[in-house]
Length: 120
Image 1 (cartoon, helix red, strand yellow):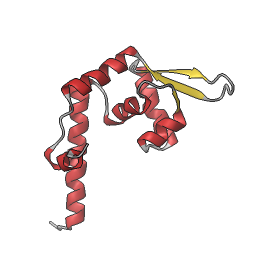
Image 2 (cartoon, rainbow, N blue to C red):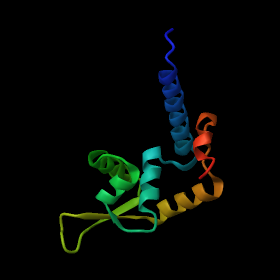
Image 3 (tube, rainbow, N blue to C red):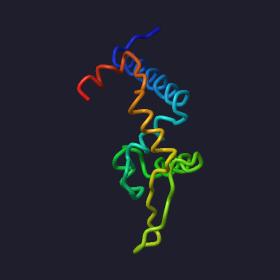
């Protein structure tokens, strides 16, 4: 087997991210991207462009993740008042409860990722 250190390290990170996401799904019922969207919205009402900027997801991927969150009754949308083409998103009580449980109980972070979180 070929061993290229940076590729092997990236493999370990990807595996750890998959483990982190699986832990989120099992514990809180949300994917990593859905959790990031919930955090990006927080207590605000925001347009999808803000969600994209805050999560680093592309606009099209943001749309898919927000739709999944809507299907889980985590997010509601409403039309903009001035521009009816613009959508604004707000968390539901279910989503706020999910975030609160994450704050209180934490998220299990795989060992390889823990150094990233030491100063946060």
